[in-house]
Length: 313
Image (cartoon, rainbow, N blue to C red; front, side):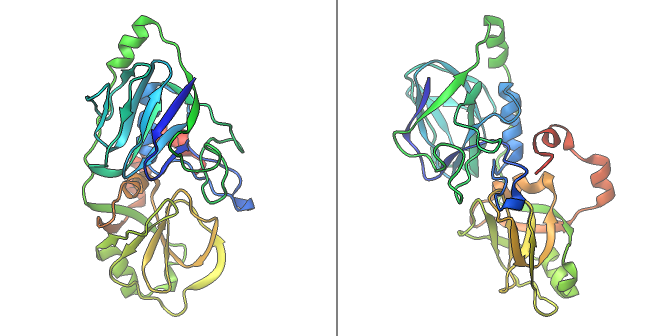
């Protein structure tokens, strides 16, 4: 049983929650960029934690299946249609019949959409994950982005008639992503390498998302963050959400495919809950960083399901 890729789009990959425990060997976790959209999709389809999905960037794919499937998508609004023109709304479950084409368009809102069937994409698990690491060429489908003509093996779950009716009634609200975004950070671990004025610039100035942003990092343009001398450091560990400041004084937020170590000083770390905001940031969007209040985070953490999925990330 297969999912056939008629048109792959510019960057469509197989992803899951990520590959953990190998950073000491130089292999980053990869996995989905938008952990919130992924967790919603897993919940909506009642899939196993860690089920593989398609991540589509800016423009989606065109798919066809060789058997009936129950499917849904979340994240960016890619105006999906199936069966010749029936709209597939985000956050709803649909039955896609064998041979019917499902087509995703350009992202109207957001950047990355996530598509899955009730079941999973049966690509091989590599180091405990089916996620694609493009830099290393491992995981996913042959370690690469999808191409026209690919056929992905799938495993479809069986449902009773009552279960089918219940599944088709399920919905999860989706959002239209704003072009002005506020992102919370915890300052450090190398905050002291920047002047007080530099820290205030970082927290007080709007930054514009660069066209050079990708799965490795969100590059930002705007006011330079002033350093207190040389900000080069002996390379140390980087996590999803680390904010490095380049020698040019501009921030880069490390994302899912970040390198495991780096030699730029890190002025801050984006809190896990706000990383999905950056995952959906389009070139030209404006970002403002604000300092997170730790006491409020401890009291009101939305950990729950995300913590189960991404606790080690």
